[in-house]
Image (cartoon, rainbow, N blue to C red; front, side, top):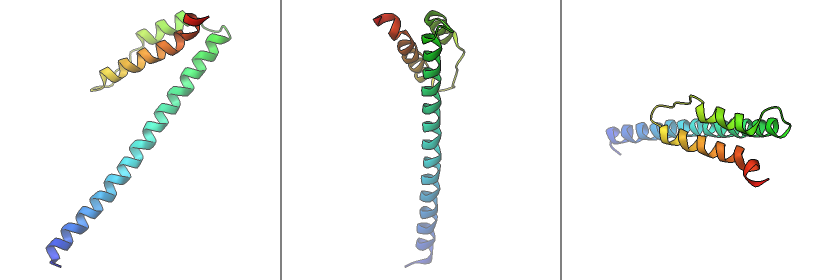
Length: 94
């Protein structure tokens, strides 16, 4: 095999390994963020359930919370809407 071709193959193999490693790191970061979000919503729900905060106060806070992630405004607003729906569930169904 041509030495130049072998060098290109080796470089591509290294780049693939680097990209796989970066993907693993990104996936772990996503799981970490999702888990933290789940814990946060569970904690807020528990605080509502035991009367520490009201559902209305929690929902109002989420509506006004200044969460901005450049380039992901739509995703942030979808998340905000989902959390508000989750927190509003007991009020709507009990």
